[in-house]
Image (tube, rainbow, N blue to C red; front, side):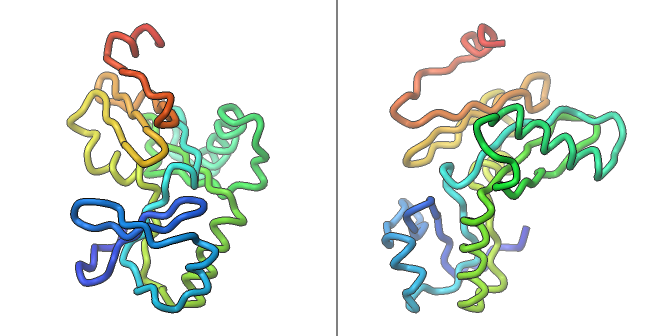
Length: 189
């Protein structure tokens, strides 16, 4: 990940909206379709992708470190977790694959991601880092927590560690959120 440039703005983006990240809130800037034709946006140092921009799932630990195995497992787990989605329509990533622990798989709709990258290239925004918000916060915060919550305007993502290993990811629309405690999670398991 690139280091932050404090003088450049940071944005939070959903499938339809763009927000400026300020010290205390998300400031709505408008609809993406309008903003992509707008030339007044400043080059960001970072764009956080909102929860509706990607799917997230867990890949199991691997016994042997192999790039081919990571790619195949990522594809298989995507199809297992999201059988209603076409794998060919998604760009699959794995976030820091580990051979001895479960690791995150991330899937972003290809056409949408390519449009975003084309816009950034067209504007000559070549040094912009694009990160799924939940995975970024997971890397920063979850090490100390048994259950870590990533709250977004429309979605909550819960990362659950068991014996210091990432064990489960639960995503819910904010309207469906119910209290999750370690006891209720153990009941799910």
